[in-house]
Amino acid sequence: MKKKILAFTMIELIVVISIISIISITSINWFFNFIDDKQAKMKIWEISILIDNLDKKIKNYDIYDYKTIFDTNIKDSYIIKENFFDLDNYADINYDYINNSWSININNLDWKVWILSIYKDKKLIFNDSSLNNNFKKNDFEKNYDYKILSTLSWTTDIKKLNSIDLIRIDKENNLINLEKVTTSIWWTNIWNVEIVNIWWKKSFYNSWSLINTNEIYLYFETKWRENYIKITK
Image 1 (tube, rainbow, N blue to C red):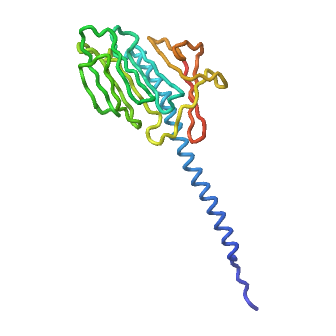
Image 2: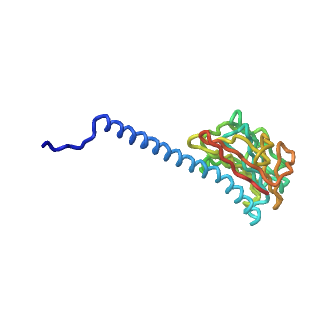
Image 3: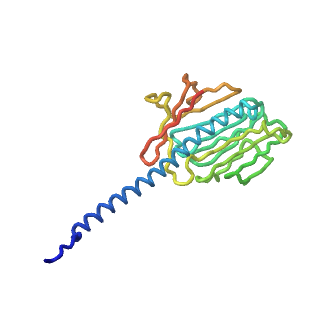
């Protein structure tokens, strides 16, 4: 009597290998999408943490005020300005997103000398004390954060430094974009929002108009998924 040999046929092996391959590819894709989603959410939540830290700096008297500007027409970055509302003298930098350039607007110059320092990803790239209202620069690169410090030459108190930060939402992959801003979780879209805190009084503005709300929602698109953060007064 012949002994029966148990074994897979070629078709059965092909089917099993195909199923294992499909499961493996699906699992790998799911894993990498999961990692990307987590990293994107972390980058988005860093914005909320940064604003919380600005509020703490005001409470600790480290700064007098700040303004954080988000614009849905400018999806890849946002601006933070510190110490502008409490001083009679300031140098304000106006950034042109379309042309990726900026110009300086100096208030109450008189005989005083302004010092301007520009940092590119925390590295000093520009320092000058002979500035005027016509000063312009055009070398903001897309994949870097910038910090601009301005002060009068006779001021040594760092708390009186006017500072402007141009912060990229996602410098590496350009996969995170600001899609919309709302005054509630469901409706009332607005084009832009300015989060302003002056001496512990926090407000929201839309194109210089006061928004009568206690919270703002910033929605970001990340690989066709939507995430949002809530900013409260």
